[in-house]
Length: 101
Image (cartoon, rainbow, N blue to C red; front, top):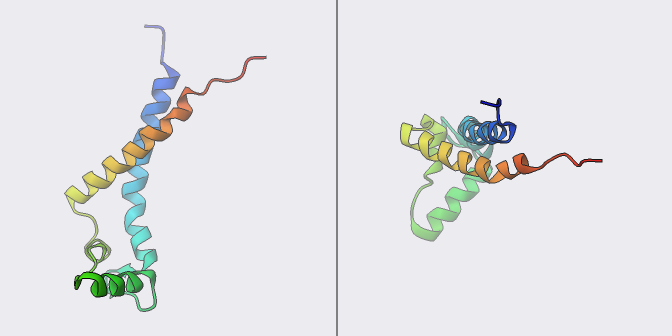
């Protein structure tokens, strides 16, 4: 074994970070948009989305359930997978090599 392949290590770190960051930040982002535990905040982006969807198809807004109760196990898995996929796409930066003089 010649040691650690730094390119592969970089890819593992970027992919793992993509999944973890997505799962960690999604609930906070939804609260910032106005999907709170107490309902949709008046005058927020969430309120505008709820109005739009109610007019368009008579439905509520799915994201409210995440804002109120947090992510389910399946939701965490789906978001983690999406974030890891984004990390995998970004892992192309790991293929960059330093310019040689």
